Structures are given as structure tokens and as C-alpha cells.
Image (cartoon, rainbow, N blue to C red; front, side, top):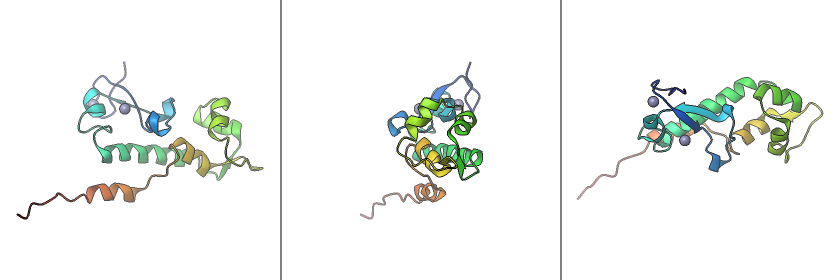
Length: 134
Ligand SMILES: [Zn+2]
Ligand SMILES: [Zn+2]
């Protein structure tokens, strides 16, 4: 049984980069969350900053994994446990250098063609309530 990564209750799978955002149906992109931490108000589908926080975690994890500037396809497949077919489809539009594919391109694709930034998180916290001056 899957356990919620936040509270340990029984969970199902959340796609960190949502499938509609181009996220992969792959363990790398999974986060186990219970009903409440998935669809509730403290879950990524209701809370923008939680959604962003999980995406930043994934991006950092990928940046930590892919520390070299380039990786050959086979190496990427084994490191990320992705099938060569999936990887080729993902990286089809990118230049294959002598040393392999650029890590930045790989991360960008895996993040659903986005790069997330801590600054984005701070901006969510800057949200100001609308005061009624009347
Ligand atoms: Zn939970
Ligand atoms: Zn979900």
C-alpha cells in the first residue's frame, strides 16, 4: 500500500508535473499523497504554493542527479530509469552534442518545458488581501 509522504496515511499517486502540463507517467514524477494532501486545501491541486514547492523539489532532485553538463542517451536512460524510446521522444527537438544531450535541456523537458524558481514561491506569499476601504 502506498503511504502519504506528508502524513503516512494511505495514499495514491500524484503527478508532480501534472500530465496536462506534459508530466511523465513515471515514478520520477510521482508523489504519494493521501486524499487530503492531494486534493484538499493543503494539496497541490488546491494550493499554488504547495504545487510549486513540489515542482521545485523535483527540479532540484533532477539538478542534483544530472550534475555534468552533458550526458549520452544511454547514461540518461539508466540514471533516470527511462526507456530509450521515451527519452528520444522527449529530446527529439534538441541538439545531440558529441558529449550527449545537455542536462539543462533534459531537465527543462522533464519539468514540462518550464524552469521553476524560488522567486516564484516568494511571489505567491506576496499575495495581498483585498481591503475594503469603504
Ligand atoms: Zn497525507
Ligand atoms: Zn494529483
